[in-house]
Amino acid sequence: MASVDVNKKAPDFEMSDFRGNSFKLSDYQEKSNVLIVLNRGFV
Image 1 (cartoon, one colour):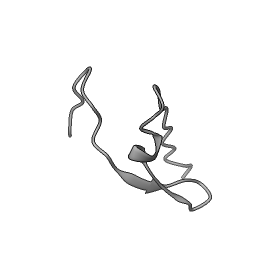
Image 2 (image 1 turned 90 degrees about the horizontal axis):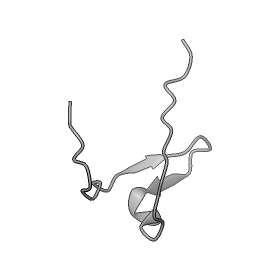
Image 3 (image 1 turned 90 degrees about the vertical axis):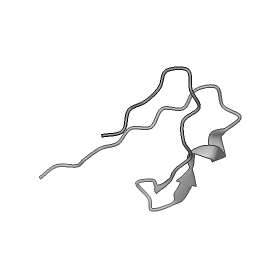
Image 4 (image 1 turned 135 degrees about the vertical axis):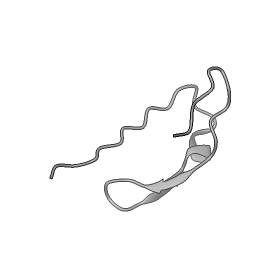
């Protein structure tokens, strides 16, 4: 599993939101904080 370094820039990635719209982390580069919630769903 990859680890995260504190006080380091996060790697850019692209994914889809719950509506199917694609977005990249770099789209929020001007924001000071970004919270991404990953929901695995229910089985």
